[in-house]
Amino acid sequence: MADTPNPIQIQKFLGGIDYPAKREDLLSRAKDSGADQNVMDALEALPDREYDSPTAVSSAISDSNS
Image (cartoon, rainbow, N blue to C red; front, side, top):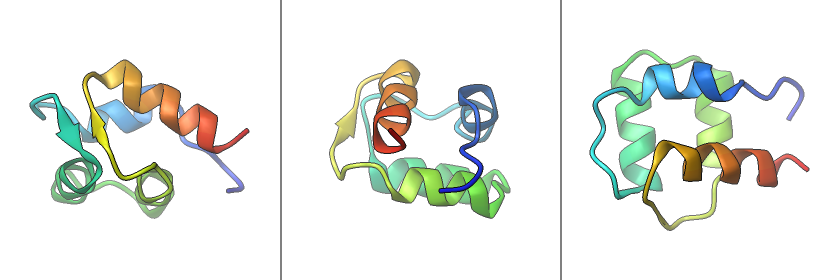
């Protein structure tokens, strides 16, 4: 991925989501919040599992881009 969105950008589009949340829930919330394709691509690249906090999402995005 060329331009990985920073955690603040991603969390802006996930505001109000209840954790734990599955990848599908994260994608749905981001889409409903008007996330750009860069953010959607980052979320789609996440492993399909439950995330228990915004920090877990950010860590998984960082890990998937290393």
